[in-house]
Image (cartoon, rainbow, N blue to C red; front, side, top):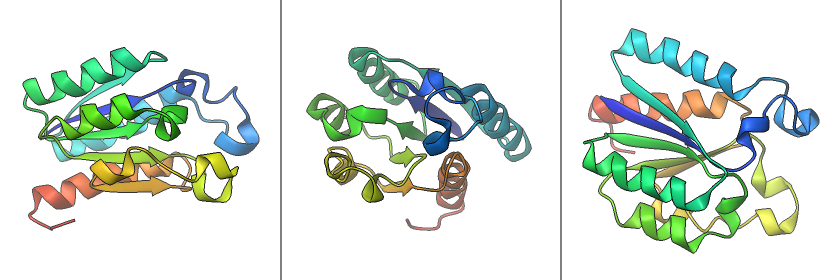
Length: 148
Protein backbone atom coordinates (compact mmCIF):
# COMPACT_ATOMS: atom_id res chain seq x y z
CA UNK A 1 0.00 0.00 0.00
CA UNK A 2 1.20 3.47 -0.92
CA UNK A 3 -0.15 6.57 0.82
CA UNK A 4 0.52 10.26 0.43
CA UNK A 5 0.07 12.55 3.43
CA UNK A 6 -0.51 16.01 2.05
CA UNK A 7 -0.57 19.16 4.17
CA UNK A 8 -1.59 22.62 3.04
CA UNK A 9 -0.92 26.17 4.16
CA UNK A 10 0.39 27.01 7.61
CA UNK A 11 0.69 23.38 8.71
CA UNK A 12 4.45 23.83 8.67
CA UNK A 13 3.75 26.10 11.69
CA UNK A 14 2.19 23.35 13.86
CA UNK A 15 3.46 23.61 17.40
CA UNK A 16 3.92 27.37 17.04
CA UNK A 17 0.67 28.50 15.43
CA UNK A 18 -2.24 28.90 17.84
CA UNK A 19 -1.33 25.97 20.12
CA UNK A 20 -4.61 26.41 22.00
CA UNK A 21 -6.40 25.30 18.82
CA UNK A 22 -3.84 23.11 17.07
CA UNK A 23 -1.77 21.73 19.96
CA UNK A 24 1.94 21.70 20.71
CA UNK A 25 2.93 18.88 18.37
CA UNK A 26 4.81 19.76 15.21
CA UNK A 27 4.28 18.49 11.68
CA UNK A 28 7.49 16.48 12.15
CA UNK A 29 5.88 14.82 15.19
CA UNK A 30 2.85 13.89 13.08
CA UNK A 31 5.04 12.50 10.30
CA UNK A 32 7.21 10.46 12.69
CA UNK A 33 4.14 8.95 14.34
CA UNK A 34 2.57 7.99 11.02
CA UNK A 35 5.89 6.64 9.74
CA UNK A 36 6.15 4.32 12.76
CA UNK A 37 2.67 2.92 12.04
CA UNK A 38 3.43 2.65 8.32
CA UNK A 39 6.55 0.59 8.99
CA UNK A 40 4.60 -1.88 11.15
CA UNK A 41 1.79 -2.14 8.57
CA UNK A 42 4.13 -2.33 5.54
CA UNK A 43 2.86 0.91 4.05
CA UNK A 44 5.00 3.04 1.77
CA UNK A 45 4.17 6.54 3.03
CA UNK A 46 5.26 9.88 1.60
CA UNK A 47 4.83 13.30 3.20
CA UNK A 48 4.49 16.67 1.51
CA UNK A 49 3.58 20.14 2.77
CA UNK A 50 3.17 23.33 0.79
CA UNK A 51 1.70 26.75 1.28
CA UNK A 52 1.15 26.94 -2.49
CA UNK A 53 -2.15 25.74 -3.96
CA UNK A 54 -0.65 24.75 -7.33
CA UNK A 55 2.03 22.61 -5.70
CA UNK A 56 -0.67 20.70 -3.79
CA UNK A 57 -2.60 20.16 -7.02
CA UNK A 58 0.55 18.82 -8.69
CA UNK A 59 1.04 16.33 -5.83
CA UNK A 60 -2.55 15.09 -6.16
CA UNK A 61 -2.00 14.46 -9.88
CA UNK A 62 1.38 12.82 -9.22
CA UNK A 63 -0.20 10.52 -6.61
CA UNK A 64 -2.39 8.95 -9.28
CA UNK A 65 0.48 8.71 -11.77
CA UNK A 66 2.61 6.97 -9.10
CA UNK A 67 -0.09 4.41 -8.31
CA UNK A 68 -0.85 5.77 -4.86
CA UNK A 69 -3.62 3.92 -2.98
CA UNK A 70 -4.82 6.92 -1.00
CA UNK A 71 -4.21 10.47 0.12
CA UNK A 72 -4.58 11.80 3.66
CA UNK A 73 -5.06 15.52 3.10
CA UNK A 74 -5.19 18.41 5.52
CA UNK A 75 -5.85 21.28 3.12
CA UNK A 76 -5.86 23.95 5.83
CA UNK A 77 -7.72 27.09 4.84
CA UNK A 78 -7.94 25.92 1.22
CA UNK A 79 -10.71 23.63 2.50
CA UNK A 80 -13.13 26.52 2.40
CA UNK A 81 -11.98 28.32 -0.72
CA UNK A 82 -10.35 26.09 -3.31
CA UNK A 83 -12.42 24.92 -6.23
CA UNK A 84 -9.10 24.12 -7.93
CA UNK A 85 -8.18 21.57 -5.23
CA UNK A 86 -11.70 20.15 -5.36
CA UNK A 87 -11.38 19.69 -9.11
CA UNK A 88 -7.92 18.11 -8.73
CA UNK A 89 -9.28 15.52 -6.28
CA UNK A 90 -12.25 14.83 -8.55
CA UNK A 91 -9.91 14.39 -11.52
CA UNK A 92 -7.93 11.48 -10.06
CA UNK A 93 -8.84 7.92 -9.24
CA UNK A 94 -7.24 8.03 -5.79
CA UNK A 95 -9.39 8.08 -2.65
CA UNK A 96 -8.83 11.08 -0.38
CA UNK A 97 -9.61 11.46 3.31
CA UNK A 98 -9.80 15.08 4.45
CA UNK A 99 -8.25 15.73 7.87
CA UNK A 100 -8.59 18.72 10.20
CA UNK A 101 -6.95 19.01 13.59
CA UNK A 102 -9.66 21.27 14.98
CA UNK A 103 -13.39 20.71 14.62
CA UNK A 104 -14.11 23.00 11.69
CA UNK A 105 -17.85 22.71 12.38
CA UNK A 106 -17.55 24.27 15.83
CA UNK A 107 -15.43 27.22 14.75
CA UNK A 108 -16.16 30.38 12.79
CA UNK A 109 -19.07 30.05 10.34
CA UNK A 110 -16.81 30.48 7.28
CA UNK A 111 -15.01 27.25 8.30
CA UNK A 112 -18.19 25.14 8.37
CA UNK A 113 -18.26 24.45 4.63
CA UNK A 114 -15.67 22.27 2.96
CA UNK A 115 -15.33 22.65 -0.79
CA UNK A 116 -13.47 19.31 -0.80
CA UNK A 117 -15.69 17.03 1.30
CA UNK A 118 -18.05 16.15 -1.57
CA UNK A 119 -15.17 14.58 -3.54
CA UNK A 120 -13.45 12.89 -0.57
CA UNK A 121 -14.36 9.47 0.82
CA UNK A 122 -14.44 10.85 4.35
CA UNK A 123 -13.47 13.61 6.73
CA UNK A 124 -11.75 13.52 10.14
CA UNK A 125 -12.36 16.73 12.06
CA UNK A 126 -11.73 17.65 15.66
CA UNK A 127 -9.59 14.72 16.81
CA UNK A 128 -6.37 16.70 17.02
CA UNK A 129 -3.37 15.17 15.29
CA UNK A 130 -4.96 11.77 15.96
CA UNK A 131 -7.14 12.45 12.92
CA UNK A 132 -4.15 11.61 10.73
CA UNK A 133 -3.79 8.19 12.36
CA UNK A 134 -7.54 7.59 12.12
CA UNK A 135 -7.38 8.33 8.40
CA UNK A 136 -4.43 5.98 7.98
CA UNK A 137 -6.33 3.24 9.83
CA UNK A 138 -9.35 3.85 7.57
CA UNK A 139 -7.12 3.11 4.58
CA UNK A 140 -5.94 -0.07 6.33
CA UNK A 141 -9.58 -1.13 6.66
CA UNK A 142 -10.09 -0.49 2.94
CA UNK A 143 -7.06 -2.68 2.24
CA UNK A 144 -8.84 -5.47 4.13
CA UNK A 145 -11.91 -4.99 1.98
CA UNK A 146 -14.05 -3.01 4.42
CA UNK A 147 -16.25 -0.63 2.47
CA UNK A 148 -16.07 2.92 3.77
